[in-house]
Length: 66
Image (cartoon, rainbow, N blue to C red):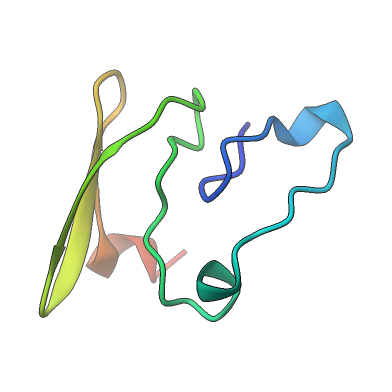
């Protein structure tokens, strides 16, 4: 498992310092939480989507429900 905002492995014991915008919920995830790869992110007026080349696409509407 990886931090979706910094890409740091969560099992490494390091506490990732998240950007302030991510803490406030204003920033979409930039890294895949499953593999840590950088994702393609598209921001629109009504939300965003992010695509990992290995694990597919997540959407802001689905991400907020977690």
